[in-house]
Image (cartoon, rainbow, N blue to C red; front, side, top):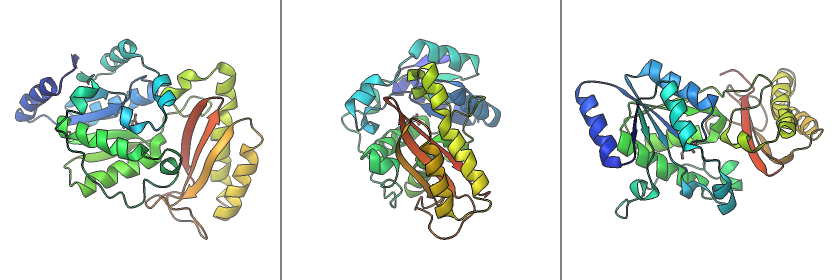
Length: 281
Ligand code: PAF
């Protein structure tokens, strides 16, 4: 595996592979890598000839400076894991490489996908995501890019961005990786104590119970029951919604295929998000 820090260096390496007809798979990350990321690397390796991963804690997607400061950073361990799991190029750029002065941020109409849930509680977050992912796609020019469905709303936003900007990249959404007990893998879990990891299991319990309830109750009743169960735990809820999988609008009335329950909450100081599809697509 080659570690590259500059845009020019990465472009050069990839251009010559592209000329040889090799397909490029890309996994963008913010580091503090875990099994969930490694599953994305493996998926990329199975689908493409060359695997590129970026490790860049993107400042523009944090709306809270202490969240940015506290975001875990483990570059040496990240490089070791990427190598072990078959990544070919690990891109560790600086902020200046990603955002040069002459870089023009593309304008993208996200059709309201950016104003609900995460967008509501983290204003500007998705502008930052669009900014960095569009820039990374422009640098890497992947055929396929792999994203974890734990960030369900992010996947919807990135797909919309790709379609609006007519970028020739296929966005592949990959199932959320979970611990044996169901906690969604997240870099933020590194900040949880053992006790908090147990407490956080209420998230998956709530989502799983909602999937059962959805078989016999309406969306409104399923949501009400989910809230009641969640409140038996110790976590502080930010939002719990059942949404349409394409528009991300709250589901009122009847079920639709792919209807998804999304949650954001605090376990102590650590903000966690998760989601589960309640109705088969
Ligand atoms: O999901 C993440 O880790 C980040 O939002 C991403 C896609 C790497 C952009 O910074």
